[in-house]
Length: 321
Length: 274
Image (cartoon, rainbow over all chains, first blue to last red; front, side, top):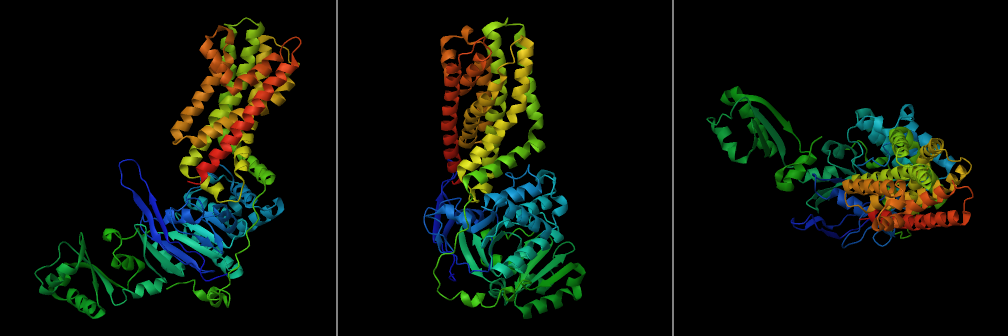
């Protein structure tokens, strides 16, 4: 097993609906994912995450470029992807009318397991994820988070060295989330399973990922550990000031900040060096400015800040779930 | 910040990253045709309990209703046979053609095919499993319709066993057609429309006595695969059925079934990898 698992200089030009210009969903993306790693793809809607994953799983042929998984060329042999990886897509419509138990068993059978192994694995996975109680219920009748967990269970039946999970924890409660991540960790510890995770949940990305690639308009704008990415903006802290009504521009120190803030309603967001931040906090928590201040927070940078600092999609930021 | 740090990894895994081992990982075995076909069939059959039962009743009631209406129009003989056979095969057309076209149309548009496409399963297993299940859904309705029709029009029940051949063969032909329509239709609404049109054709061309139809309609009737199922079934109501013709009609159904299922499999392949 090489350190380099996947490489794509993949350029995909996809024609949109008539009348719209050609859209490059993924543009010369190049990523290497190491074995045993939890690797994240982070980016706003429309950044090309799903397109990238579809190319990786053999569902979509890239116009150019190559995909190599564990020594197999997936562009030339897309059918091999299904024998190396398990994919959890965003849609459950193929399984909706099955019971949790039958969905897991059928998926195991279709992953090449014989009846006995499929049933044994089904029982083990449902138990592991705490789904045994729901085994007899159709997926359709479950809540969103439970259904997602059941779909995740089907992805785990039949061992695979690579799991490709497209927003696996959407709609889940904290208990279910924890079940997902401990199931992932167990497979990683025991079998060295590699995980490629698509997410736009920044908080989750910070906690579970070993490395993360930030995608924006089809390009990788950064790729590092969450800590490493944050170091790129480490010299800065974020100060959020919320004013009661309007900012007290008559205070000279406040007025001086005006051209550096990102303003949204009553909220001012500033990215400052630590010393500056300290001075600003001292200013606004005393004297005339304090009277106008409703709330303030001082925070070390998050992946969200990294994304913004890297100039992601017109400074809109990620969806913070 | 990470609560799942790299230390979780077994010792040496990180170090192994740098070692230039080039052997490709072993591929997991692909699912074989028969076991996966059975798995798909079983899963699809179980959907009937959750989703399809009301529509199976509709299919049967529709055919029974048509026979009752036609009772005032036809007066026994060849026409009555055609009505009973046509109504029975109509159940097959409703479920296997119409509902399967809708199912695959929806599955395709919602991205549900990705589930199957990322499993190492032969395309034929998915198509044949689903088509087989939908053909099976038609059995109770078809039998009920046939028995009811025979009693209503005073036809002999002697050769009803021929349904054991008519249902699977007409089922294969119509389900294959339905699957192909559903998988080829660019939008799910279109799949629904095509499925409905196919069923309406089976209704008009199969149930209404052919002798009263203009030449064009008779030609269309000859092109529709369900016609041969209807013909085969209708012949067995006779005093002394000509079994060679029955076999001939069933053979046409079987051949159309093979072709349409092959087309559906190709359509699945095409729809799954875009």
